Image (cartoon, rainbow, N blue to C red; front, side):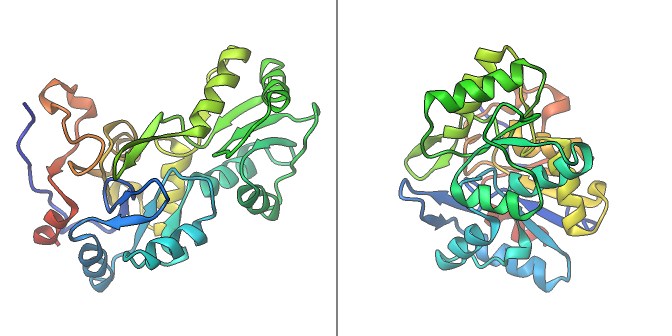
Length: 274
């Protein structure tokens, strides 16, 4: 048994952050997005009110610009300026906390080019002082071992996401980045630090992009452990959407500190509060 929907209060919210998969769209295995009912209308109404919004996906296989273009093509118009991924929060975090330290990056070519273009020094050898894992399409054992040795030797260890899966149109889609991260963590006996959702690095990036304090933001998503947890880190108003991965979670069994401020069946239910 699950708790009944509770309508959110959004009139005093100054900015919005939306999850993507399971909240605004269902993702097919070929990568295309199937817009959920009301997704486009909700975004349009927020923009018309003059309040800023961002979409934050934990996907790190391609850049934010390409993800925004794909969503727009599939029926959810969004600009590159309204799109965030863990790569943006990772770049900001590395600049703030590890300036000039060489990074061993396990990622796709697109992500490598984006991070290198941001001025982050990348290296392929044992001189790395930081290991960062994003989505990977393929990886060899020597690369895994090299990364594990850097981490075991005291190097900083980051991952874009440690979630095992995300909501797809035909069920959960497993995260390859999480698989690689887990292999390194096991070998090096170290836990990674997450730079995507949920993390302080991510909520800082959201507040910076929106230009408003995080306690004035509404965070809307389908995952208690990522989206709602992220909002709570920033003191934001949190809204759980039942259309994705948490559709069957019994909130009565969830500790009060982890529960959302409001629950809706689908994103279209936000229209009445906007």
